[in-house]
Image 1: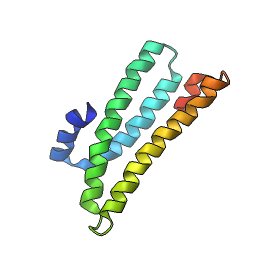
Image 2: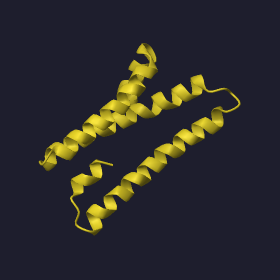
Image 3: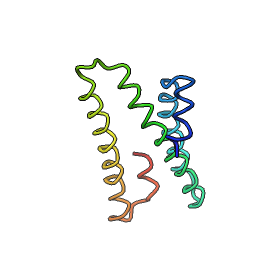
Image 4: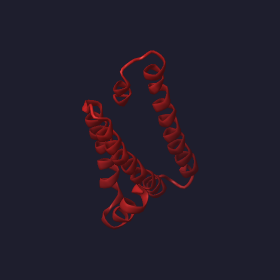
Length: 111
């Protein structure tokens, strides 16, 4: 959803500000989610985090495509995509203590 709604704005107004703002918003939303106690509010905020991450994907790929030399472009795009999957795996691993050892599940939002 974020790719469809925010990416066209990034094309018109410039991708770099949206890419930088996306990192800020992921951090801010995760901090807010970690502080909330109401599950429905956390789910609501997670929706906006997902929209933000979805907006980050096309902006990141476009920035790499535009600013990396043709010789290294394929490697740079592969590294970017690998970093996204590594982040997803890190998120799953952060959830393990919450699921396995009865740790506070909001603690995984800190990672």
